[in-house]
Image 1 (tube, rainbow, N blue to C red):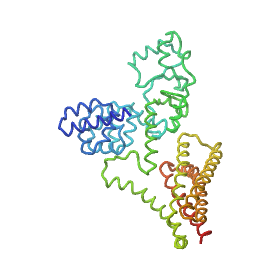
Image 2 (spheres, rainbow, N blue to C red):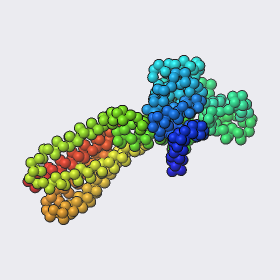
Image 3 (cartoon, rainbow, N blue to C red):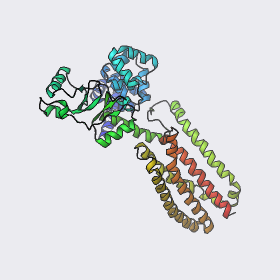
Image 4 (tube, rainbow, N blue to C red):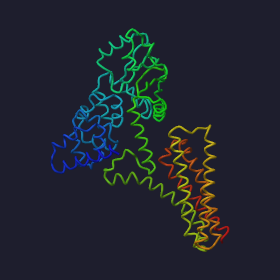
Length: 449
């Protein structure tokens, strides 16, 4: 909460200084902000003010800021930069950050950036970019320090002094053999306190296991969480060390996944710029509105099948929204639990059956409870026990189906390669609406007409 208030305070200060023409003071505020804070601030500014503030950013920081901002905001900032300015901005950037940035550039700019690098950095950049961006290889930083297990602590310390230091975020040095195969990790804390005559093999840790470069980013997050890691080595298929992942990289993944789940539930992209032109935003949102409209017509066609029943018993039209609404809520609860379980890797073939039975049983219990409540309420309202029985039966069926659909829909979407967070809500709503209307109006037609 304090960080959020500080961000709002900085935003208010900056806009006040810009409005009053105090550019020197505004520039000083921009210079005082951390790179990530500055990125969030830029995302919070309308396009015109954003352009003014971007001009105030020191050229040495521009590359780091471009990595931090959302994709659409980054694209807008890059559009206003010349090739020479962009190349100057990326000078000295960490290769993992540079890989993220280069992957989003137009092909012509990418080639210019690659030509500006020396041969070694170009090869290392190609190495990082050869992996999927959502894998351990795509997250890793190739700037690492490795040592052999047979050298002494004194030799390692002398090597580090000659090297001039260690990369930022380094808490351990990786131990490899002559073929660069991973053997263990040497904590800096142990290195600084060990007897200089002891060998690395005597004080290194052998239970710090590497992460395969092909591992998914969600698996990387899980490894860091389960093992309380600050950093971890990344190895290729031959068990050779190719890079490292640090906890700040993992925090970025967690934030991106949280934003994706939140925005995806509404069919939106977390990388969209909230200050983008209205026409562009409307175009992006139109797709899911169109899909939702199509599913609404499916539900409407079910209602149309029972038009004769509705003409005879108008009271059914009054109560009709209740059943699909309750089903939608119950289904969303199951859907949310399942989507989270999939994201955390908590569900597989061994436990899926048990979870399905549990969700169905929850649906049965809630179905009995709320069917009874709505039956009594409907009888007191309309004085007709038959209508109460019909809506109770329909609600009971829909709550059970909703629980089952909430379980099955995200698994089915995941299997066919569709993000459950993005499409699950639309599919589930269609199921609960169709089943709700069908059961309620079908029972009404069978027992009331």
